[in-house]
Image (tube, rainbow, N blue to C red; front, side, top):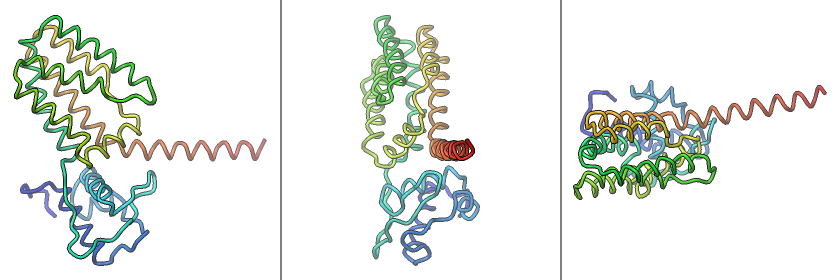
Length: 250
């Protein structure tokens, strides 16, 4: 495995290699796969790349990822059974960074006062949804689509709408976004406010930079979502031990 390979995503190579090892019987049903750090060293890839591979295998039912414990073999491949791949959350966010950055720049030169009022209202809605434990990310989607609509270019709007649809229709993307939400990774209001301020100033360069900074932060949030979940579980376990100790010594 080399980092110089560019014809395919590295996580797909890692996933295929692991499926081949499952098929060869290296990891029986119910056993735990090597830790993320160990796999990263063995395949000479980053830990986020291993994380992407695990998500791809989890979506296809080969493994079960248990928070704070690791990935366990859930089923073994059948003859000729090889992993297929959809759009990952990382690929999707990278595409959004490219498309939506330029869309924000164009929107800054076209957006009306009425549209700015609508975008501002959606920022408030994002804040409200963040405060609701059962909240969705509907306002976040509408915020980004409102900016795409303000470009006055239906092709741009349709492309960005399709990217947002992929968050739900791609199993790999949907799974990681769900994990991020469970890990309390939510839309950051301040980042959306920065985009809004740039649009209000009608500054194309500032709008592009603000949108790209926002989506780069989204990418970082996805990269660390599973780590945050594991940390949260470890903190809960530690607190439970403290409480048991306190009761026992009281």
